Structures are given as structure tokens and as C-alpha cells.
Length: 459
Image 1 (cartoon, rainbow, N blue to C red):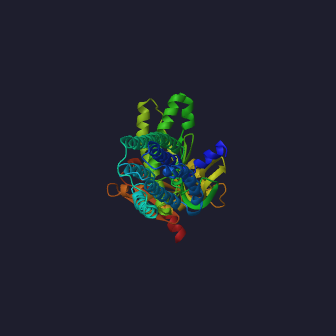
Image 2 (cartoon, one colour):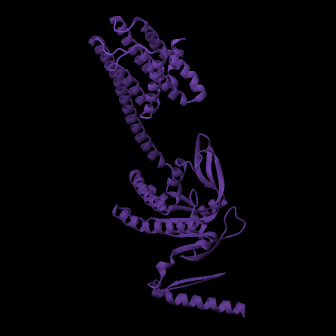
């Protein structure tokens, strides 16, 4: 057997106790041989020496093949065989009561290291049975008194065995401690790496991947989503006026604030394109189309409110030109999933409903939130909107009805005298506390003319 083959053989689980078994039986053989040499043990006990030297090699080889058939039970069988062999050897050799416990302790310590306390259930009964059987069959002469030299030699052998096993345990403990520390360092490094990589993904997508709910492979599915697009009105002109460092700081501050609002409302951030932001609701997690739409519009209102805070901060920084965001929201069935290549993919959305949301954003005025009829139908009971008419969108054969989001209805309650009315072909929203005095007559005149034309057409 070559050195490489022997190393591979001894590295097998069934053979890992081979060095310990050889050590224990070799030391036992040495003690018996020394007793024969001193004349304290009969010369015919040399058979025990030969057995001790041969047994561990034969036992390990048999254990290797036995492991292939009965699995882990072979290890327990081997330990019981060790106990039986030791009992036979101690009985045949005739070692007295003082020396015998030393070798029994060697067996017990080896079992405790390999199998724990349960090893005592296998080894001690087997050992006692073996002693009784051998004593009954051969009735060897037991020596009561041993020369002090042999006793001291047996004690020295026991101490040497204990020292070697203790050192092995110490080395294993140090190796285990080192591996544990290394594992902790690796875990900390992977945690930091995962935290850094998570910044390139929406938290919902990152969580789905790490929890195994999303497979990292190309694929998509159809889902009803609410889609949000936004950008800063006049950002291109502003970029020509500001230094790149100031512009970068402003943009990062804006995107950070808006991202926190999006995540707070449960939105999945798809991407940033310059000052533009794309968010969708309904995947990977959904609360239902209605709640997703409400969350999207609530997010847009929160973003518009936050912009008033940012404008004041930017004004203090010397940016006099007021910046406004415009937003577009649409609800509909889209294709969502991993697109790209096997080695570089992006979790995103595609479909005509996505294009409509983008189109709504592009035609919205500064500070406005423009939504489609589908979104409006899901949020109209809690959010007041103003009809903005129809627009023609590329890819849609019919004109698309649009609505401008005003505010939550609860914010427009008794504190503001608000009159609203909506029906097919007509919508009115009148805030009596906000109407300027010089506009009152023009509003009344418009209402009268509208009423007259409606009456003439009807009657």
C-alpha cells in the first residue's frame, strides 16, 4: 500500500481512532512484556503480547469493511470489541487488582472521548463478561502481589497514555477554537459583504433571495402591480448651474430621503436613473391590489410633502431656484422578474402599464401627482383627486383618463370647507378657504355658464 493510499485509508471515519487504539494496546503489550521480563508473569503469557500488537491493526481493517454494511453501528461494535479484548488480555495475563484498573481506565477514557458517557453502557458490561468468560474457560492464575518495579512501570504507562491523549485533546481544542474564530471572522465578513450587496437591491428582493423564496435565475411572472415614476422638474437646467460636487450632494440627499419614504410604505425600489426614480408595489410582497395602490399614492403624497422640507434646506445652501418633483402612478398587469443574462441580471418590470406610468410622470406638472383611472378607482374612497381629462399615449389605442391627486380626504375635512362632486363627464372640487377673493366672481360666472349650457342641451 502506497503512502497516499494509506493516508486516504486512515482518514476514513471508521479508521480515525486507529492511532489511539494502537497506542493503548501497544502500551498494554509493553507492560505485559516487562512483567514477563522481570519474571513476575509466566513466560507463556507472551501470547497476550502478540495479541495486543496485532489486534488494533486487524480490528481497524475489519471495522472499515463493517462500516460499509452497518454504518455508524460499526463504531459501537468496535468499542465493545475493544472492551472484550482488554478483558481477555487482562485475565489471561494475570495482572493483579492494582494494575488492572489502570488499563481499564485507559479503555474508559478512550470511549468517553469517542462516544461520550453512553460508552460506559457498552464497554463496562462487555469487559466484565469477557473477564468472567475467559476466567471460566482458562482459569489463569491471578497474581496478587507484583514487584514494585512492574507496578511503577504500569503507572508510568498509564500516565504516558493519559499525557498523550490529553495533548491530543488540547491540540484538537486549539484547532477547534482557531476554526471557530476563523468561522466567526468569515461570518462577520460575509455579513458585511451581504449588507453592502443589499444596498444594490431593494430590501424586499434581497430578503426573498436570502430566505430562498426567490430563485436567482432568469424568469418572470405576470402580476398586478402599482407602478410609480418620478423626477425633478428643472434638474437638467440646475445641473448646468451647480458645481458637480454640490449637485451630487443634492441628488444623493434627495434620493436618500425619497428612498426612505418608499421603503417605509413597502415599495420595491426598481432603479434610479439620474434624478428619476422607479418604484413598484405588489412584488415580492403584496397586500392586495387596493392596498398596494393606496400605499403607492400615500408614498407620493409623503414625497411631495418632504420636498417642501428639502426646498427650505436647499434655499439655506444657496440654491434659490425652487425644485419640484412630478410623479406618475398607474396600476395594471406587468411582467416582473429577473431579466438579462445568466451572469448579469436585473430584477425589474416590463409591459405597457409600465410605459403608461412613465408617460403620466412626463406629462405631469411640477408638484403634481398624476394617476390613471385604474389607480384612481382603487384609492378614491380615501384620497381626493381632480379629473384632468384624457391623454393620448403611444401604445394605447384609446385615450387614457387621468386624475391629479389632491390629498387625503381626512385632511380636507371640517377644518376646510370643501365641496366635491363627481359623476361621469363632470367633477368639481371647491375649497372655500383656499379660493382667493378676486377669483370668486370668475368661478361663479363659469358655474352659471356651465349650468346654462347643460340646461339648454338637456331641455
